[in-house]
Length: 150
Image 1 (tube, one colour):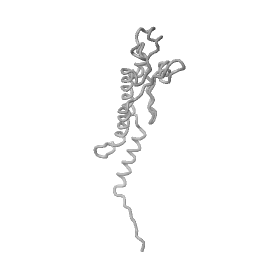
Image 2 (spheres, helix red, strand yellow; image 1 turned 90 degrees about the vertical axis):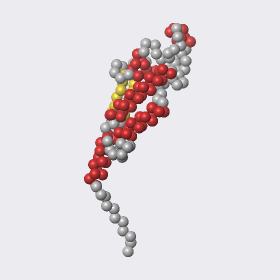
Image 3 (tube, one colour; image 1 turned 180 degrees about the horizontal axis):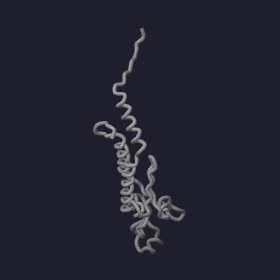
Image 4 (cartoon, helix red, strand yellow; image 1 turned 180 degrees about the vertical axis):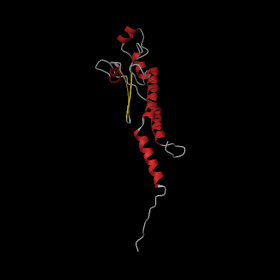
């Protein structure tokens, strides 16, 4: 006689309820993505404060016109405010599982990508910020302390 394998699922309704809860949370990531937006804004603030990392110095002509080589990317403060604070000219959009952060300031994109006459001076997230964003999303899906769905 061939061996038989029998699988019994105990608590099938509990398992189904937990799976449904996980699926619902995976769809609604607004909370952790909103928290992630705050982390990105803080990371942007750090980039402005330390001028980079890796930002090219201002051109001599810009330094002469402004009278100073620092701070880089901060003449009026308009662009910095739009990329480090909510509201105003900041553009933060959460759609499903996508977080988009940008600026309504027209010249902001040119500083991120550069032009023929101006080097790119991109805002970059630190590795610790990236890890914290992943943790926020993981924490939303399951409570690490007891394995329960939150």
